[in-house]
Image 1 (tube, helix red, strand yellow):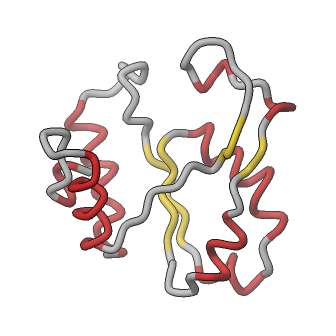
Image 2: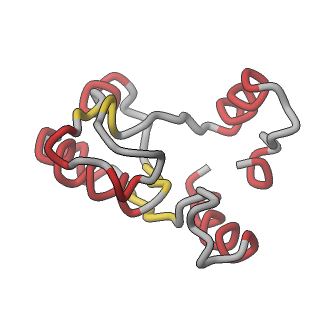
Length: 125
C-alpha cells in the first residue's frame, strides 16, 4: 500500500490510514477472531474462526465495489463465512481480488512480483 497509495511504513499509523482513505481504500480483517499457534495463517484452527460483520459493512457502504484479499487464507475465510450471508445484489457488484500475502513468511515471491499483482487493485480506484 505504500507504493500504491503513498501509505508507506515510514508514516505514522494514522497517517497511513488517512492516505488509504484518501485513495478510497478501507482495511478490515475478514476474521474478527480465531485461534492459532504462532503467527502463521496456516496455523489458524478453522473451527475457531469468527468473521467480522462484512455483510453489515457492505450494506452500510453500497459504494464498495471491490475487495482485495491479502493472501489465500483470507479469501477462503470470506468465501466460507461471509459470502453465504450476502444477498445476490451485493455479490454481483463486487470484484474480488486474490492477492499474494504481504507477510514476510511468503518468501516464495519477490517484493516486485507481489507489487505487480497488487497493482490490479489500481483499476478500481
